[in-house]
Image 1 (cartoon, one colour):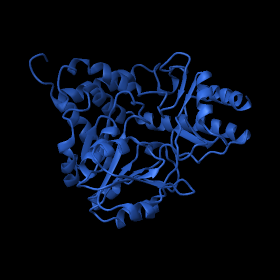
Image 2 (cartoon, rainbow, N blue to C red):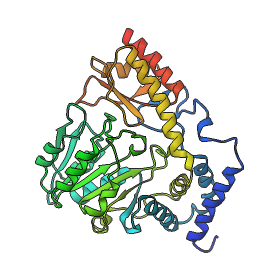
Image 3 (cartoon, one colour):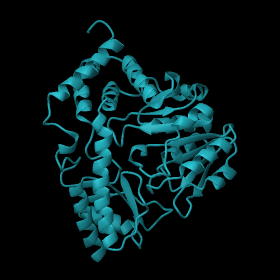
Image 4 (cartoon, helix red, strand yellow):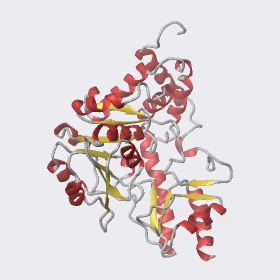
Amino acid sequence: MNTMSVSRRKFAQLLGISAAAVVVRPSLSFAKQPEHATGTAGIVRLSANENPYGPSPKSHRAMQNSFEVCCRYPDEANDVLIEKLAKLNGVSRDQIVLGDGSSEILKLSAEAFTGPTQGKLIVADPTFEAILEYSKANGAEVVKVPLTKSFAHDLPKMSSAAKNGLIYICNPNNPTASITPKNELREFIANTPRETMILVDEAYFHYADSRDYESMIPLVKDHPHLIVARTFSKIYGMAGLRCGYCVAQPETIKRMHPFQMWDSVNVMALAAASASLDDVDQVANGRSLNSEAKNFVTAELDKIGYKQIPSQANFIMFDCKRPVVPLIQALKQHNVQVGRLFPALPNYMRVTVGKKTEMETFLTAFREVMAS
């Protein structure tokens, strides 16, 4: 091991060992982790849409078993994960790009498809803003199109604003937790000229359960201008490990490759991501726990008269009926952190759905703040 690279077979064996080890450790389960395993003692962190339960037990063991290959570049580990993701999504290996979180996919897309010679970036307002900064740094004009009254992307107006460049669609959308209906999105992708690239960000895909929602990955085979991004940060609980990917046609990926840093995903994140795909309980448990806590907090907010945008994610956004900034600051004094101000919706608060006990703490603090 000290004189030669670890082979793909050896890396796969390490992951297999991790899975076997978990089988004989029944005391550690996804649903039974400590109720108050927060990043900072005494702080309830509901500000970053993180999964409070973290990676699966299989991922934990895989990370431990990856220690011996941390001295190696992650080439073989890349191959193992790409193969699994290609099989999972029904595509070929050359249709997958791994990234340092899906944020790297957004950055690659901005660099490859926006700028003075490529075109504008068209986004919703509000939406996840990282790609706005990447495009601005690339010299691109950014055009913001307000969401519709139902908090969906206004696809006709986005289409009218586009000419070449890139259209970014976060679905479910951050910060509103709302969706753009699948039929509207399908038609939009089909009718958009191929000179204009479309990036659909499905970071919260696993949490969406509406009949009006579906992944756009199956459409990639027929649409060379479509890129679909995914992440291991949310349902897989790996926000701190940084691993994401996208699915696109090979020619599109070739346009992105020159802008990508080599070996951008570390070997421990690759091991954890690969193992998490083998854990059949991770997604199901994540959905169930999120739904339970979300239903609880939304019911309580309903009781005290605060209307939420229907949530298809692991966070909620609701109307506080007054400017949200003082409320955010007051909640901090109660050791509860919630999402920042989103200028397009100045009276709305975004709150991550944490564990039920964390949501109880939030509700207690929120009631006190609103009563003061």
